[in-house]
View 1 (cartoon, rainbow, N blue to C red):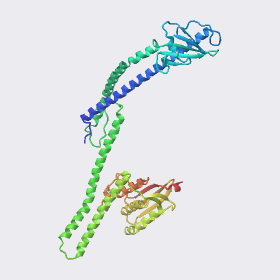
View 2: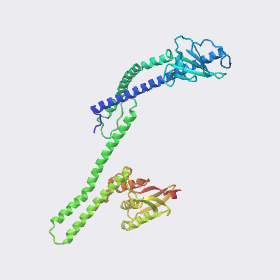
View 3: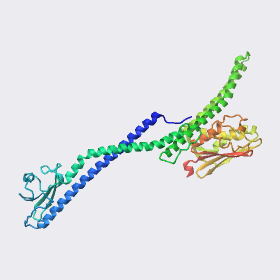
View 4: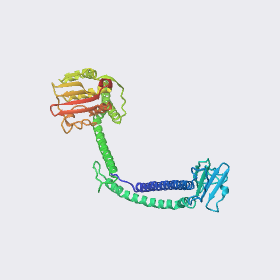
Length: 459
């Protein structure tokens, strides 16, 4: 099995990475440019208003016009292009330039203020900064300065050069995007080289020092390893299924061939053959049904008809069902426990769990042995134990007994599908519980099932 990237995939990915980096970098540069222009404009406006206000206040204080009713007009300061006094219907304009058009102020409200406004239409953008103050005698003084030759000119210059700035930003983004793609290509190539032709079930190591792609490599490596393990497990499961199905299917065929070749006139011969075929087909259907239930449980789609279940009662029902089988094997079953253990569970599937565990304990128990079933409460859990003194489980097998279709070497002498414990584990985990086992070879085993108590009981 090999894992690698095709050239077409690498090319398209490289192009996509380049476009992504380029768009992000260009967008970032454009955003910075816009924010810079906005901040510069606001700064120039505030600076112009502040200068005009200070100049007008200084002029009024120097000429004693701020709190006095007398008039002592002087020349306007250099920072103001005009000063306009409005008292009632009378207006006085003081300007230091002969080119100023007084008609522009005729319809201008004396209280109009603003940043970069038009004198004829103050609501529109223009090249003037206006400030206004009230006088002690009820008049209004208004000052204005033309900023077209200073602050506004600077802003307009920068604004006009924006296209060149954006062009330089685009070139810079292009170069930086190419550099980033090149730098990112190096670890990607290392990743591709490390993953290409990776043998199944063999963990790889990324050459060189750790980089930004090391976590990605570790995730991919884990995914590939899990896939390889899954494929290997599926192959093993298929082999086991084929092995376990071969016997009943061979018997079915042999029985059918015997019945077909028989020339007996006794209908009981054919009836027995059909009965044997039915028994073997039931065995196959049972195996497939259990496998489907386990698959549903592992996928989280098992339908559970939850209800309040008394654990000890279900255990006693199963014990009574297997009492005759245990007596034939010379095994004594005892069942004790807390009568108040109530859980939320699917009663039918829970009984199947108890039946599988008890059947195994009897099947692999020793003659004249015993099986002790105990149900106790531990905190917010109900713990059910199946303790036998049978053949036990070896250390090499104890971690594999929960696997689907797995049967230990010493258990193959007994009839079984290798699905019982796998089904037990799946159903218990579907009930938010857990199944555990402790065992000593030739001394016996203890299977424990932990299930959460019903909320009212747990509290």
